[in-house]
Length: 238
Image 1 (tube, rainbow, N blue to C red):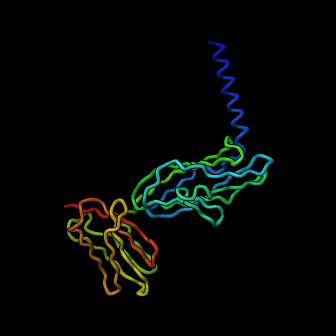
Image 2 (cartoon, rainbow, N blue to C red; image 1 turned 90 degrees about the vertical axis):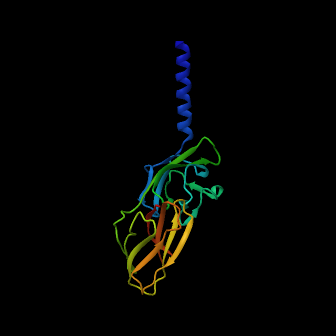
């Protein structure tokens, strides 16, 4: 039994030594974290270090984790960005000998629902499959406070009331720039479009008829000239 234990320890230490020798690129950044209001898009830098005296090329092999349908993730090398769910074979990183690489970024869109989760991006050396590095990430999206008013340069925009609602919900607003293209988008909990309403400079209130909506949680999004300004929650009950 003692001999077997000694052999096991020897094999384990040998494996650790081989793994350490094979892993010559290290992720210097801490676990990347994306935390913010729903539908925020954030960009974080990833720092890599090549500890060898050789040029190294790595290709992304796979991504592990759950990314929702309304969320979006991009892996960027400089100004060129790729979708790791579609363009995985195009995501390559080349490091010079002893280089500290700072041109790798992760962009993450937090989606339209309150949620949180984790993901891992796995890279492998094209010449040595044992030489790998992993980028670990977490995300958490939260809704703004229901009573938080938006004071944009083109519009002042309140919160929906009553909320919950069973017939007519309304939002008070004041358009400051009559030339701006301002819309209100209503989406289901899973992101399906339900309704689109144009906001007129001649009006001060937009009405949302929810009498035909199924009971549940919906999201309304203020769009100004094609840009998402804020997304908030609307609850429909019968």
